[in-house]
Figure 1: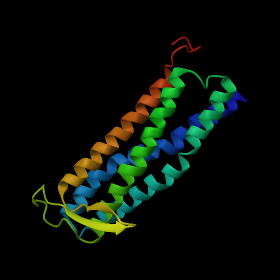
Figure 2: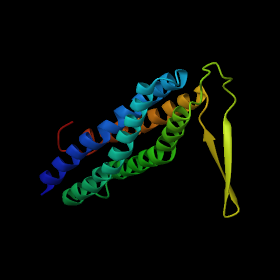
Figure 3: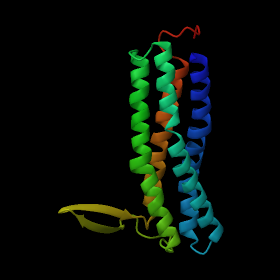
Figure 4: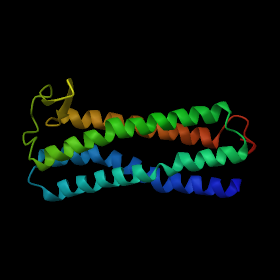
Length: 181
């Protein structure tokens, strides 16, 4: 049963996480192109597709830690430090994706669809900010109308990708491995 769970875990990681890392990495440069040329419908369509890939495969990606947990249980390694570190890094990667990458992609997509950012030489320090009040607490949402927003998104995407690369390395070259590595 361990081999079955391991195969499913690896396949889920390849099929679910791979597309997210690639599509998320392609989004910031695509957003810069779309913001520079607001009349380019193809650029806007590409952004919508990349964002949809990120959203859908992020949802499918929940299978990776679930199958990883099942694999670890069947191997009896749930208390190993390398696995605990991997689980923590996986949680952080998911938080980065859900809290920092996907919302910023949505903001940039909305800005492109609204025709915002028509002037690529817009002063970098200016960003429209919409504030909404819910239950007495103010929540601030930045509307991405400047090039700096794509740079921040690229940074958060890079952090997400680096976290997944680290988890992958821990899974392959784990302390106490029986593979001889």
